[in-house]
Length: 270
Length: 198
Image (cartoon, rainbow over all chains, first blue to last red; front, side, top):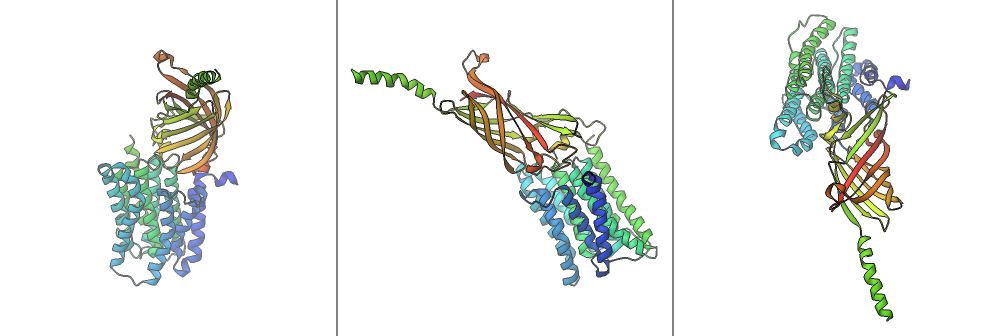
């Protein structure tokens, strides 16, 4: 048993998926099925690094934000009336989160060397969070498909960029989003995603990709390719098509961009 | 007569007093390296080292005391696998990533130790603090083959000391928890040091 739980495929895939599927199935009736992502992410953190926050490294800051994001999402979804400003505010919050995490590292490099990775990290996070919230969060299938592709893209690129830890966290987000999507495909009905789901999925994956760029060897242009995943998941599909077909098509659109991000990460080391 | 005798004694003792004063040394970066060893998949040993090190030693053989401070730039690690070949990344690149040494975030590893046991004039045991990944934990090192004397390469113009210090620690104690099991938790440490008297 202990050996099985030490297997990276279990830690970053199977265990997070089981946790997420349970949460998605149990909480979907309360419009909280989106908590599947944080259930998956927290499960991976438990197995891979544990809930230790000293010293407060970049990775641990991402974990803190990943755990806090769905709580903020619940507040946004249930305490406020939707406004046009919401996406902008979340984008700014995403940018601030990226700056909080990466500025202490980039400040050591000097402005010239810090500008490109720092700028990419801040802008990619702001874009991914803001666009996903404004265009995908209201549609459970689009949000779920984007979550799967963002997780696979961030995870795959991180693994190819020499960080299996970030890779497993990315794959855990993909597993959580996959479980959320699977419930919708089984019941044949879209469920509520909202900021509870989308903020956590978009923020964590954008930050993981940025961290893999700054702390490992993912190239900056792979992070940009990954940021285009939400755009791919917003491409039109027939609204009358069955949920499973919509989920499949939108996932494929997103995974295509995620594949490009991974290919760029692979070729960067050549 | 007796006061003259005392004066002679004091005069004779002065050079001894001077020789017994603590002496400081600077680590020779060209002949000092920290090595590490882990077990891979419970079978073979993977060894690596850091290509650079700097530091200071203070030694007082008469008082049987000594201290050492070492700083290691973690980005200089190598295990002899720096070419990725057909793989996504090489082992050395992986070891520099946040999975292991996280060199971008923690560029320096330090060891600060105090000699607590001597074997004659040679320090035998160092008790100190290893700081790795921002975590500081005690690590005890055993000193072997310690030797001091004139440096033969300079016809004795420089005075040097050198030896090997060995020990072990669990990497998970420092937060390096990635795939503990397939890659052993225990890390064996071996620091070869030569240092010139300042």
